[in-house]
Image (tube, rainbow, N blue to C red; front, side, top):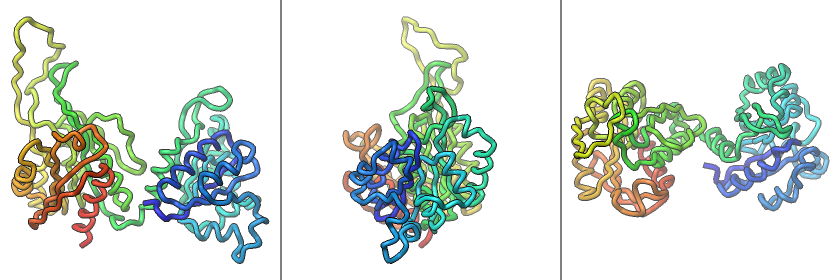
Length: 402
């Protein structure tokens, strides 16, 4: 997503400027070409040499030092940028941007920038809550600026409040979202399910599984980065919701079924990556079950088949156009997946052997086989879950746009 993209990183004079060095490093590691523009005040917090070492490119400081170029420096920076990020964005710089001032290289470049601009406000909470800053932010949002943060937390003054710059990882995620909005799935709606469900035994205990939700998260990111409007329906997980993705948290299989049926009538694609429980206690105990000397016997009943319900409605109305299922198997992986593909009328199924130590649950890698409704089959080598997700979404994109 970021590979080969030219990004201008504007750094202003706030204590959060040290985070911008981490952001610059992450952007470069993602393959972006990063041009850093610093205000004079920013150099009091972080030396330009730091950014030059991280980006392997000269740091732009003075508007007039760039005038020797054939194309005026600030204009060239703005024209070439696929995205401009201003992090931190102080109250002073926000006010200048809102009023169209161009009194330094950073604000002048912002005025000349033809691409989207993302800002990460950072200041004391009193400054953030000030009516002037509120008005300035409204102006920038109305003009199409993308805003991330600020976050609550401990501030430079020692106090606590709203004003901390968002973390570099969150800004990188937002940059991916901004740049992907015009991708091949722009205007398409994709619903992704992720993680495992929990079926209550009593108020304390539940039946669950080992799904971490990482594969579903990777699929949501890959779809979002291609421009799709993504709804992520997930069971309990510690993962942070990606920027620009609608978050729907559920716990049980019944709750997931309700959420999926509500989200899919107008969806273009449904990707069922969640590990949904097949069985549940029919009536959870109202109080904690006490330990007894004899064995405890649990009665379990089948949960609803979510994909079957989607398939039935799809047959009547044709939505979602593409339905992708997952088959987490421990034996006869391809045979079981093919049977599920046919039985549930899926467009595509992703099969993997979760008994393998290097794929499946609770690891960062996966080894999957893709089977489609036309009889095609492709076994992919071991790769990261992010890479596997890209392969799946590439095929979903082909089915939707082909």
